[in-house]
Length: 159
Image 1 (cartoon, rainbow, N blue to C red):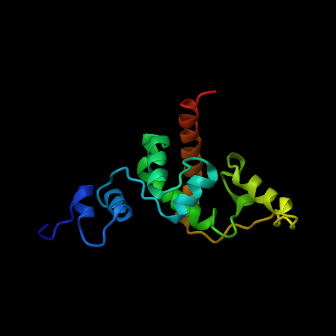
Image 2 (image 1 turned 120 degrees about the vertical axis):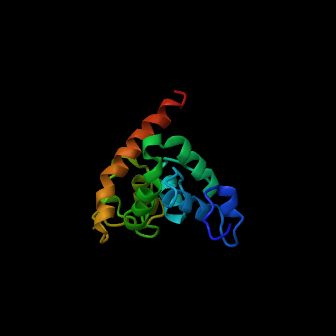
Image 3 (image 1 turned 90 degrees about the vertical axis):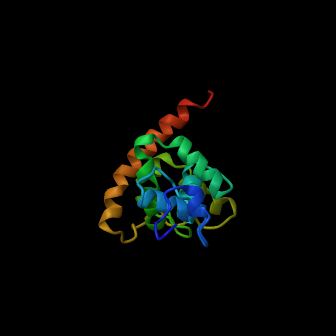
């Protein structure tokens, strides 16, 4: 490539150590393409919220691309990643502080599961983890994107 970073997915993925996720990140951040790289945080958020459920990162990526309105696709990766990293965390999600809590099935599932197992439910109060300013600013944008995506997704579902 003569010292130049390739601008096409196939060429990027042909480079040593570059897979689909890395290629998507490069295409999104360097070349400004509307790519959604699905990492563990995005995979978790997409499945918990029901926005783009899938069993594999590729299935989630395809569902996110299909469900996310075009105007949000370039930034969706960043918003979902930050939300998964700081709010919808793997072990102790901050559901009561979540900007999507009223739209998400996960809080109801996570609170009901311990009761079904005869255990005490987790405390209802949750304090949001310290978050960089850019992550705080993305919260409202994430909610707007989620609502638009949900409308788009719901419009294609049979009643």
